[in-house]
Image 1 (cartoon, rainbow, N blue to C red):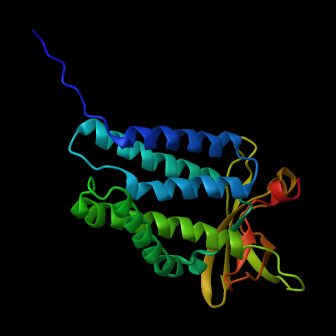
Image 2 (image 1 turned 30 degrees about the vertical axis):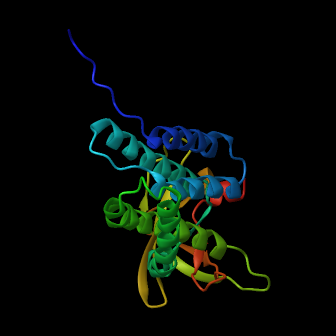
Length: 229
């Protein structure tokens, strides 16, 4: 008689169900930027509470959880109309703030599941993963908080050269610019309107506005068409 091997119940199933629901809400139900941020934050906080086991299906569900975080993050960044320069990314600031937060949340998970927690897996595997997730999330918070208009602050007007004119696709009209800012060569892509896209050719010079950030990280509008719609 053939026996069916039962897979032991794991709390991962509960967290995955919640994560998928939150992800769907963030992608299709959230109407504000804050709601998207809160949904991603909840997903990040769940990481230390997951179980890491040897069963293949459990690990597959664990991977699905991180796919939910990435999908929500990409959707949020796609909604933003502004962006920092590559040289101004607050990575190390996010790391310094993310490490203690990751440790505190892992310690909370350890206390909550005191007898069912594998200390080696929690602090040896999930804690480093939590540092990465917290760094990613705090970086998003810093970018959004920084890229706000400051009263009476003047934007810097910078001449930029069009280095690439991307073909129009699905109502997206993208131009790549090259310019120097504070002694560094920068390259950015901006989604512009149809009229500007048609009138612009590679090698043309346009004026870009670089705004001072609240924390000192300069930012620009990456989607001019959506901003002035």
